[in-house]
Image 1 (cartoon, helix red, strand yellow):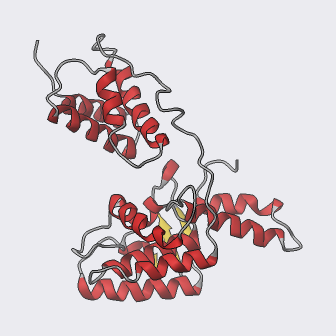
Image 2 (cartoon, one colour):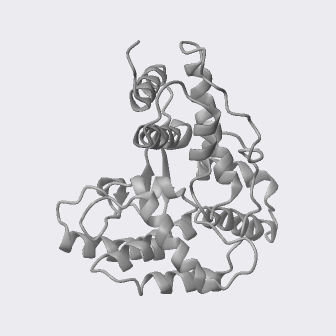
Image 3 (cartoon, helix red, strand yellow):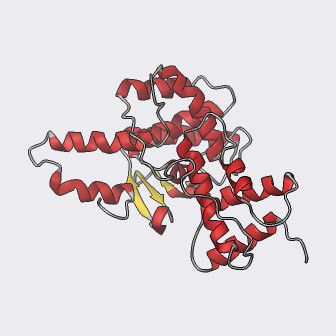
Length: 277
């Protein structure tokens, strides 16, 4: 029987699923990582529980939730693979606990956000300090998802109208994001710096090489910057900028006479949620 690499199996699976309309962006990247690990380790034959569990637990110093999520992605792939390869072993579901346990959000204070932005401004590089300072500032004042901010293209930022357009985000929704004048001014300053260094850049946030900033790079830099906060216990995440923004808006509305109850749906739409819950 002809031996098929794990990478070939994963690519065929992703092509089939995407042809049916599934985007599988983060899941697809994880599966490709799994397949390359499998082939590099010279694994041959059917997918095994041991292989899946070993790969899922490779990252060190991460929450077990991330291990569980990685295992869940491979488990879904294994269920598909078992249809044509009956020897495929299905990894157990809860080896590392639930894959979708909602972590308790960290609500940044204004002072903590300032600390992170100031620390970002001290990063080395000709553009890097400005890129990350502006990126994290934008997340804090708009509640954008990190993926939405990193995908922004130069044409998606309309300075004349003071608006951002977030295209085809989660749930395939496109929406406009109005900017406060202070946010628009900060983005304009950054845009001029980037334009001077990389006039042909297509993405709004770029690296010191003029390429689009990636999520892993942002995650790595943020892990260094948050050490400035000296927080005990669970460390804040990039996504907590979004939680903090939503909480601040709701608190401000609750303090007003009109209250927040009738306006929650506005915030839900602004944040790009599929359901108000």
